[in-house]
Image (cartoon, rainbow, N blue to C red; front, side):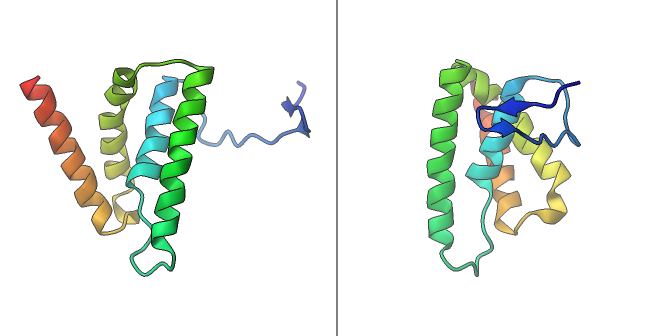
Length: 116
């Protein structure tokens, strides 16, 4: 088997958590981590970290959409399970404000689905 290559040569791929599934589930996971993840409250430059996370997320979504077009509703359908999974899996590793933000997101998403 030949190793994966890029234009700059061989690359390493970490497959420890590799699975087959819906690609937008991965995009939603990236959204959860970058949109809802928070640096610790005492982190110097916390606002700068959030700024760059938000900027990177926008660039990531725009580029992903260029390479593999999707509509917003398709990604939205994966955000709710992504947030719920992150909340369930990473409860002990989240910062105090993250679970509340995730629970609020889940409640709003379920409310909109029930009324829509």
